[in-house]
Image 1 (cartoon, rainbow, N blue to C red):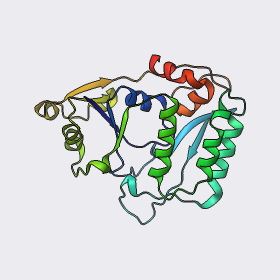
Image 2: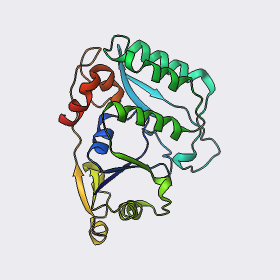
Image 3: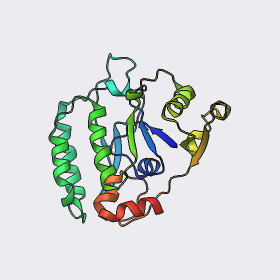
Image 4: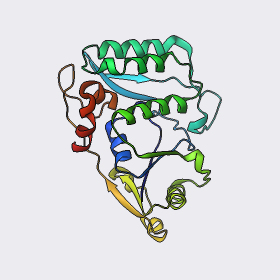
Length: 228
């Protein structure tokens, strides 16, 4: 049994989904602290005629102190949803598969989500479906685990009966290998490929949101993602 875990990113990049693809169970870390600094849970990159197109979801932080990701609320001032939708429609107007996802995007950005986690999970599930990933997804909050750090990850594995914990190479240095070994869990090194595929707007940009891959490549996106 292979388990991996990740915070719920906003429109994640292909490596996020490659990790899910390589796992038997993919745990969304919704019950951990929301990062104080810039975070992929609220922003990501797409592509337009100027190059990288950054989009950010504004959230409520002032006076709230430390928050769990699951508690973070979206700020709906400034009509950012309408602006994001129009930016995507303009950037991908000539993408071969925009029409297949336009209804989803219009519904997504016309829905007033109270919490960031609900918005991100809606996006993640849509992208997983169209990347043809059938890995079981669980929320950390469903497991009711109170540990933190290495103990949290080990307890997730034990609770789910995992023999391997899949971790990206850059994160392995933060894991206590001895603790995992004593718990009977092997740390598996993941090096997600960075797929190259047909993109709009000039020179290729690596590791954009997986939406860019799907809008440009349709059903071929799965094979491109896993082949790297």
